[in-house]
Every structure is written in C-alpha cells, then in structure tokens.
Length: 388
Ligand code: COS
Image (cartoon, rainbow, N blue to C red; front, side, top):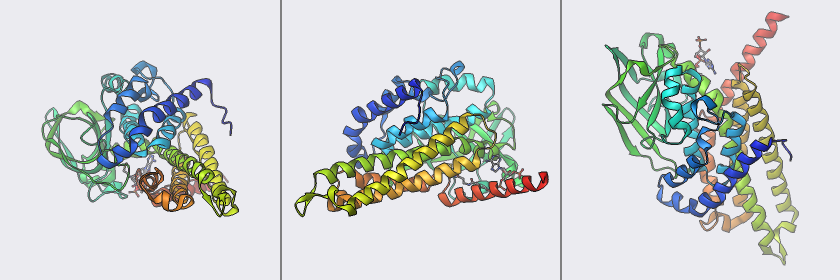
C-alpha cells in the first residue's frame, strides 16, 4: 500500500533496506549462533547517518522524527531483530537527553550520538522492578559536587557496549516513584561495572547485561531535568519509543511473511506448489491482513507523535501492543506454512519466531500496555464528565 512517504522518507527506507540486505542478511545466522555484537553493522549505520535520524540538526542530526525512525527500524527488523534492537535501544537511551537534557547536556552528548561515535543504553529495569517500574531500588545520593549511585540494573540492552547510559535512580526514597531522578552515566565512571552477558532465546546479536553501581560517582551536573523527575523522564521516553517497538513487529512479520511466500511457491506436495492450496493461501492472506493493519497503525501513530501531541501514551501503547502481537503471530504462522523446513536453522523463520517473542515483553509487556491504555481511558472519561 502507498503510505505517501515523502521522497526523503523513501530514501531512508531504501537505504535501510540496502544495508539490511547487503550487510545484515548474510551474517544474521552467524550473529544468532555466536551472539557477537554487530559492531561492523553499527559502523555502517553510523556512516549512513542512521543514528542521527531523530536528533535535531543543531546537534548534528537529520532533524527527522518518530516516523523516519520507525521506517528505518522496520527495515532492519525485516532482516534481523537482534541488530535492529541494538540500533533502536540507542534511540531509547537517547530520548531522555533529547526530551529533558539542558542545552549544555545536549551539546555535549548529542553530536557524538548522532554520528554513531558513542552508543547509548537506557537503564530503568532492576532485578525486583520490571513491570513495577516505580519500585526501583538503585539510589543516587548527592555528596558535595557528585551523585553517588548504588544498585543494580538488569537486562539492559546495549549494556557493556554503550558508552553513555541514561539511568533512573531514587534520590528520595520516602517519595517512592515521585522520588526518582534521571542521570547520565558514562562508561568508565568510577564504581560503574558490568555483569555477565545474558544468554538469550532470541535477538542474540544484541547485548544484554547487568549494570552494577558500587559507590559510582558522577558529576552532579549529570542529572537530567531535576530531582524527582526520573519517573516522568522514563514514562515520557517510553511514550516516544514504544511506537518504534511496534515497527520492529511490522518488520519481523514482513521478513517472515516473505520467506513463507517464497517457500510456498517452491514447495511441491500432492503434485502442486503448496501456495495453490486454499489452506495455505488463507494463512498467507491472514498474515498479509495483519501486517498491513499493523503498519498502517504504526505509521499513523508515528505521525501523531511527530505532530507534537502532548499525550501519546495511549496511542503508542496501542501501536506497540497490536504490532508486536502481529510480529509474534505472523512469525509462528510462517514456521507453520514452511512445516519441517520452517523449524530448521537452514531457514531464517525459526530465528525470527524466537526473536519476535521479546517484542511482547520489552519496553513494557503487552499486559502493561493494556494497563497504560486503560489508565488513559479512565482519564479521558473523567475529563469528558467534567466538560459535560
Ligand atoms: N507521562 C507522564 N507522567 C506519567 C506517565 C506518562 N506516560 N505515566 C505515569 N506518569 C505519572 C503519573 O501521572 C503519576 O504521577 P502523579 O502521582 O503525580 O499523578 C506517576 O507518574 C506514577 O504513575 P502511576 O501511579 O500510574 O505508576 P505505577 O507505579 O502504577 O506504574 C506503569 C504505571 C505500570 C504504567 C509503569 O510502571 C510502567 O510503564 N511499567 C512498565 C515499565 C517498562 O516499560 N519497563 C520496561 C523497561 S524499559 S526497556
């Protein structure tokens, strides 16, 4: 379907697709096997200005927005969700600086991030605070001109590989979630260490590690916004980036769908290619319906986010939930269409199916998204009652 992308958006799509096909597809199975971080591909993305897509021009970026980021993420995800996650998590880590950083902080960090010289990671989740993001226990205490951080962050994408970390920590425990603050922590800060690399079911090319803060000292200027704003920084960041997770769902579904169609045209059973059987056609048709619906939703919500709308929680949660459920369903069905072959590692769909599962879990499970949507509905209903 024609989504009336501008010439520039089409160029971004074509460039991301070219990188995906030339640089990612040939190595994705190997990266999945070894779990090696895709630094070579990150360098190619950097040279192609892909890291600066959503960063304003004054800080060295291309000044585009959520839709352009979604287009790029979708294309990378069509080839390999592990690589796409490493790229997208960089945006997740950058948004706190973009949305809440001072001009000085933006000048200091964004140009290097735009150029892909320094990778970023976002640190919210902890061993005892996943869905319950307000329950984090990592603390940051102001001592003279420094904040001292103590605690552990868990399952941090790009952990260990990134140079810059945006971290949420508690500065006033008595205030609970309202006592959280956000900080920029650089790799190499004293007392900042990494745990072991996690051995994951899917997205194995992406790196997931613990971040350990053991009396980690950072300059007090590294706080984002002000004390007490950490939970808001995290939630506003996730509002901006969840649509991009939806784009990952669209991309991985599209990749799996194309493999299933190609296979169904070649595979002969009962004397005919299996694509000629209605049972298979209906499965492929259902996949096509879901992918197109998910893409239409993701692009619409991305445009809504780019319109500068103040409240986008509900819409980005809707896009994330729908499109990532599509990513899971379509990859499972692609394996089914391909039967025994789909289950084998010679074909990429078993990897796509393993990879897709994380989309329903990270950046807020799809159950949590439904909570976010429910809360927004309650707020909207309350507002309507007031104006009636
Ligand atoms: N934008 C601005 N403010 C927000 C907000 C948003 N999107 N969402 C919540 N807030 C505010 C609330 O208004 C509330 O402030 P007040 O007390 O001043 O009204 C505060 O933040 C706490 O909100 P709430 O009480 O709704 O928080 P809960 O502890 O109930 O948690 C959910 C809410 C479940 C939505 C949150 O914990 C969440 O998103 N969890 C998933 C986290 C996640 O995505 N983890 C993945 C890790 S990052 S890859």
